[in-house]
Image (cartoon, rainbow, N blue to C red):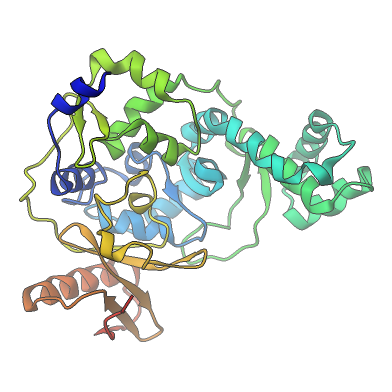
Amino acid sequence: MTQSSATKAPLLDVRALNRATLERQLLLRRSALSAHAAVGHLLGLQAQNVQPPYYALAARLDGFAPQALSALMADREVARIVTLRSTLHTHTAEDCLTLRPFVQPARYRELGAFRAGLTGVDLDLLARHARELVEAEPRTMAQLRQTLSARWPDADPRALAVAARCTLPLVQVTPRGLWGRSGQVALTTAEHWLGRPAGPAPEPDSVVLRHLAAFGPASVKDMQTWAGLTRLRDAFERLRPRLLTFRDPNGNELFDLPDAPRPDPDTPAPPRFLPEFDNLLLSHADRSRVIPPEHRGRHFRGNQAYRTLLVDGFLAGVWKLDPDALVIEPFTGLTTAQREEVTAEGERMLRVLHPEASHDIRFGTVVRP
């Protein structure tokens, strides 16, 4: 597309992009989708810790109960696996077996940082040996380090375990990931755990369409950020005749599905309590559609993310759950009406996820930059 034709594409301002993205993310209004359908529509839920996928669905689904997702995990209809951006996600079984092959080039690229510790190691042989180990019995990373080091004593033990994780689609077995349960991280292959072979990697075009349905309107760089991949422009170009194009306030070209919802920018957006590392805040190269410039970086400290609060569709604060209180720390002062809406949403979240506990709701000191 030429620069002149790009500038002629309709403009979507920040609020228009915000409302469109919230609608795709099931955050503008709660959805009647099942937990399984929602995990599939969203192309997975960020899951470095056990609880975030449950909080993510509680914010998005009408009638959600944590037991619904926990049962799916126990029944092996969803699983926890390293996929997008080299991070752990909860995916449907179908996506575990196809999206992981799609992002596999990024997993191989991740190995580059560990090459020095893998000198003389045949990675194909390592993958076969590691597969035999974890399919015989789920193994922890410590167990993998110990066993693989016995086979390759001159290699770095940590590099060997990382190589197994990067070359194989390893899922975390239950009880890890179940609501209200605990368990160490033990790994086996997705094929073994789910009882079926991995499919071939889907064509990039099909993943682009799914990404736009969940995160659009989006640029090529947005999708590359979401997937942790490069060189996806060709897929967008092949799809161009089937897509609409827009531009954002910075002149970046955005693609979208013709029939996708793009709500009025003035559509009300109720408050939402999101978990740490929610994909809404991580899946675009330009995150100003949900993170105001003045709040950029305020939901992180180092590499640790806070749980986040949306007000009027935008990042507006952080929150934490103490033993006796839900503590909300807004970045700026809230109006009386906003405080009432946030309180009501907090009460709802507590009823859904922690009905057995008694929590006060407190507004903490406004967090300053």
